[in-house]
Amino acid sequence: MASLPTRTLGRTGLNVTTLGFGALELRGMVAGVGRPLSPDQPPQILNAVLDAGINYIDVAVDYGDAEEHIGRHISHRRSEFYLATKCGCPLDNSGFQPDERTRFGVPMPRFHDYSHDSIINACHQSLRRMKTDYLDIVQFHFSPDRQVLEQEDAVETLQELQRQGKIRHIGCSSILPNVHDHIAMGVFDVLQVPYSILQPEHLEAITAASAAGIGIVIRGGVARGEPGAGSGSPDVWDRWQRAHLDDLLDGMTPTEFLLRATISNPHAHTTIVGTLNPAHLHENVAAAIKGPLPAGALEEAQRRLADAPPN
Image (tube, rainbow, N blue to C red):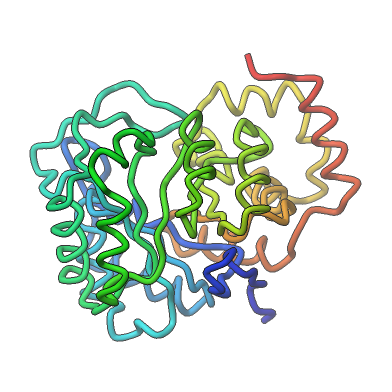
């Protein structure tokens, strides 16, 4: 079987697979959100991820039990993957109640803390949970604005951990409007940004960040899955229907089409997709191995979507 293609993650120099794994599905139940996991699901999917050749795993302190599953089941394979986690999240989310509002599909939590102690404690907790002595990337969670980062000396705290060898690269999970400040700050090696051809609002920022040497990690590259099969928004997928993109599938599933469309963007260095289903994982791997969409199909999809703007 052919191998997953790779791209260089900006100035980090990390050679990452174009398909990454998002570990949110491994959180279990957190504040009534998520779903219970059977004991065999975490080791099964995590080992399947590595066996498929995926070398980029994205997780966060507040993804429930996800970090602990990584430590328990694949820490002995640490040399096979790059590990990206986040800071600023509540360290104990047992009583965490997310706000119902969202921005670009990101829940707006009631409390994030970018103070020195919070970041240091989050890093040490992640190291302990995942049974590793270094983290390849630590990202500020939830797109904090520049003023907050500067008043908390948050970047300096990550640089302190970097000098200690506990983290290798500094990143931020970014959305509009703050992503533009994050690029201008000139301190981030990696930005994680939402994007798909159905939700292209961040395309200009992605292009600018990549041109500045920043590694780009895409989330939402398959629009969070088709309705009924994932957690995709019906409003987003309504745009798919209005653009009549089913006509362009040529034997592909909508998920394969979207993933390959995302990979078609040369600035999308890796696209993280989460699943607990090994069959879905292997479908995503097969799609990524096929690579970008044929140019004609992508151009026609973009033309049709331009004629069917978001509601």
